[in-house]
Length: 235
Image 1 (cartoon, rainbow, N blue to C red):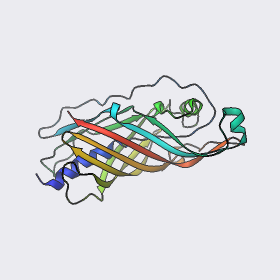
Image 2: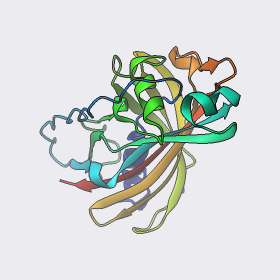
Image 3: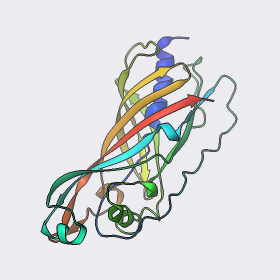
Image 4: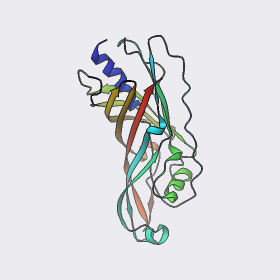
């Protein structure tokens, strides 16, 4: 097997799990009980394919968004005025990738990766409840998905255990809207385990969300970051 071929196939996996997240903030409703991410139904792997599955307990998907609070935020929410960077995270990630590492010309197998975005949790329960029931209404659109269509900037060769960097291009679906997205990926394959981080930036408005803007209270930036830390093991 050519080293480069193996590298290209397993790297596609790591950032495919860049399943996506939306973030914004505001006034409040209580957070609902977490909803488990739908498990990926494993199809039988074709002959010669290997299946890698995400380990949710060792993985995390996050949004990072800029917010600015004004004077009324202290009275309403006990939040001091100023600019902050807000982070919301969840471990409700599901997905798998089937790879044929011995035949670089073969197509990929069954590949599905999702994040349950209505389980995102930040440092403010008021914010978390609001984005689930209002604004982006994540309770109505609980699942986000990323599917890769290509890889760019991959190194010409790879040795097991080496950390590599590349970009993964694909389609991000959130709130029933699909947009193209490019993830910057850092990843390592060691034995039967893949670990890595994938990051990208997106716009709330591109997914039909008006960035929150509450007079004298707070504003939220339109652009936000998506960060996915992943561990996946071969079945």
